[in-house]
Length: 203
Image (cartoon, rainbow, N blue to C red; front, top):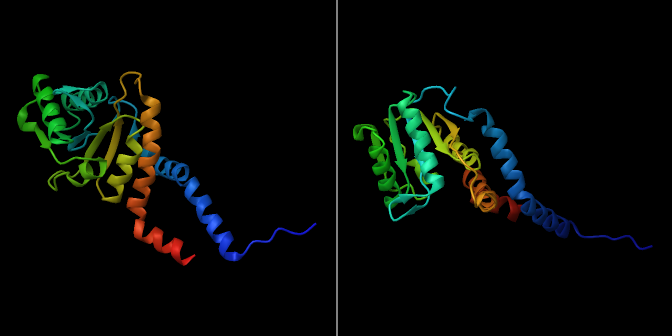
C-alpha cells in the first residue's frame, strides 16, 4: 500500500481551512466563557451601575417589536428600582426615537434618557457610550449579551449585562444562527482582521 503523502504547504492550507470552518463555534465558546460571570438572569440581584445601555432592534411604524419592547421594559425596571440613574437608548434614529418615546410614556423622566441615533450595530452602541458614563448594565436578550459584553470588555467599559427575555420568541432559531456569524465577526474585530490575514499568509 502506497502511503498518502501531502506537502507541508498543502497541510498548512488544509489546517487553515479547518480552523476557518471551526471559527464560528470556537469564537462562540470563547466569547461566552469570557463573559459568563458578567451576565445576570434578572433585575433582582444585579448591582447598581450609572446607566443602562438598551440595545436597539426592529421597530414597525414607531411600534417596538416584541424583542425591543422586552429590552426597553427591562431597562425601565432597572431605572424604577434605582439600579441605574440613566437609560441610554441606542439604535438607528428610528429605533432610538421610538424607544425614548415609549419610555417617556411609561413614566421615565426625559432628563434621565439619552438618545443615541448612531447605534447602527452592537459595536457602535458600545463605542457611543458617553465618556461621562463610567459604568453600564447592558440590556438585551440572552443570545446577544455575550457579544455585547465582549465588545464592552475590549473597550475597557465597566459593564455587566441583564437578560431581557420575557417571552418565547418566534424567530429565535434564526436569531441564534445569525448571532453565530456575528460573534465570529466580533472575534475578528477584537483579534484584528489584519493580524488574522497576516498570520494566514505567513503560515
